[in-house]
Length: 236
Length: 252
Image (cartoon, rainbow over all chains, first blue to last red; front, top):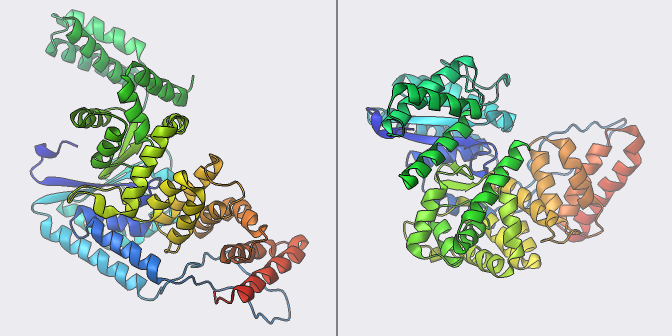
């Protein structure tokens, strides 16, 4: 992101289900807190250590059941490692309130961008929790003050709770089509002239068309263009 | 050749064209699960690079598609990390040196200079378990169990993932119950019961008298109680779970 080109400073948080630091809602909240300066790494280390040292193993096993018939035990996800769950919801809400307050207070100087990377691979109930706890009740309203949510996922992936209704959908194909091929040739021609690799418009377009014809993906084309410019600089 | 092969091929081309000390440094970086520039520099210097060259190499790596940025940290892309990690395991001296450095940093964060950014996993208990396992599997397993005492968080998820990875690589004993227990519990708590079941069964099959076995027996017993043909096995497991609880004299 081109940070300097905007009237307000950008701060960004990348949420990725494959990253342990942002896999679950509590981790996502912590990352946002860190980015906004509400938490430091030392705070988190201390919290981890306190949990590890003080929480005894706690599990509620199904026992002493006296029933005349069948006992159906559903696949509830229970809290095996225990700890005192009471107050967790209140603490979470308090942390969310602090985030909202900080964003509101700082909205004149900076904007927060939250980028969900490959959300189709994330834990769905964590996305739903983010939507319920953070987005619906709080962050959504702050978009009017500059907050930005970007969701990057594969085409056609939609979950009932994710993503929120977008203002804008951008298709980023990984292959050129007829129209983008032509635009790529024009862009390349401009770069080739700017870099002094060719002298005329006609030569630049021929050169650009040759490169596009040999690189069907934008990623490879840009990589090969960089390599070519570096090589030309070395030879001249 | 698919995308994966191209990525690996690109990496190998890069390593082949690099000077030997650069190659060593890139391989050394793969010892860490996640990196900050500061820790990457320490690893590169451990591999033999001079300080200024280490800084330039790390700066350059950010422009490659070998690495993925993750907020204030970064790591090698999933497709190239196993290739580098295999090279690291083949180089015993470098393997020992890098994991020793990271294990020390994980257990003594005071060794970091003030203001240095530290990868979060090194401070959460995961780093100590992962890097100590590379040096001594017995000590590492104990640290894995200690670090698993927290509530479900990304740290717990990473703990299970790394423990299973080290068991599959032969770093941890194939009969150790800690890796399948940690991974199985994370999957179970995420509601991914089908994926958790075979891992928890491995733990429940153990004859050890341990909390982990009692918990696995309880969960697998619950799963088996859903099908009439396995009711007998379910009852056996649930009774065994209670028996272990009684023998250990602990209240779950």
